[in-house]
Image 1 (cartoon, rainbow, N blue to C red):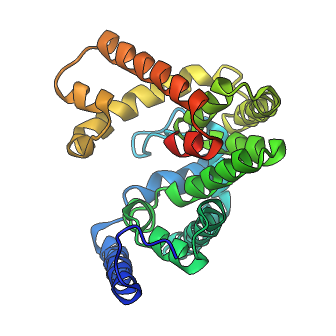
Image 2: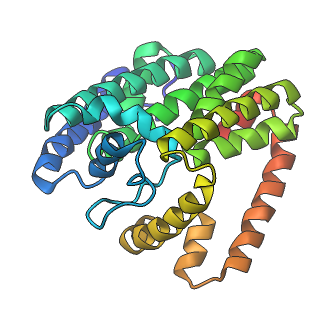
Length: 278
C-alpha cells in the first residue's frame, strides 16, 4: 500500500477519517451559511435555452461556464430545494469515488487508500460538497484522461479531455499536453467534441451564434467580482501578480512563458507525469 505520509495503516486511516469528518461538518454548516456557489448552477439549469443565461436579470448570478454546460444542471433544477443540492452532492460524491478508483489503477494504489485520500482532499470536502463546485466531476475526467495517456488509448484520452471542455480551464493544460506530445488523433477528436460544445451552446444561449462575445463579457464581470471576494485564496503566479497590481501585458507574458516551459516538460517526461503536471 502506498502511504505518502509514511504513517502506520491505523494512523493513516485515523488521519483521513478526521479530515473526512471535518468535511462532513462543513457540509452541514453550509446549510446555515447559505449555498451561494450552488445558486448560479441551479439558476443556469432553470434558464438554459433562454437569453437569461448570458444576459441575466439583476438577481441572477453570472454564469461563468460555456452555455452548454448549463444542460448538466437541468435535472437538479427540476427538483425542489433542498433536494436539488442533496442529489447533486450524491452525484459529486460518486464522481469523487470513481476518480479515486481510476487513480488507484494509474498509480498502483490500494483502491480503498485512493478513495480515502480523495475524500479527505479539501477540493472535494470544501470546494465541492460544501459549496457546490464541480471539482469532483473534473477530477474524475482528468484521471480518466491520464489513464488514457498511460494506456495510449486515443478514445479514452480524447473523450475525457473533450468532456472537460465543460470548464475550459480544466481542459486547456491537458490539450497542451496533446500538442506537446504530437497526439494529432486525440487533438482532432477533442476539436470535434469542442465543435459539439459550441453548437450545443448556441441552443443553450437561445440561438445566439456569437455567444462567445457575451460569454467573454460575462467572464470579465465575474472575474472582477470573484477576485475581490477570493483574492486571499489566490495561489497561482498570475493571480498573485494581480494582487500586486500587475497589468494585463505582464500577466499575458507570464502565462505564455509558463506555457512554453510546460510544453518542454510535457515533451520530456512520461505520459503519466505529463498528465499529472497538467
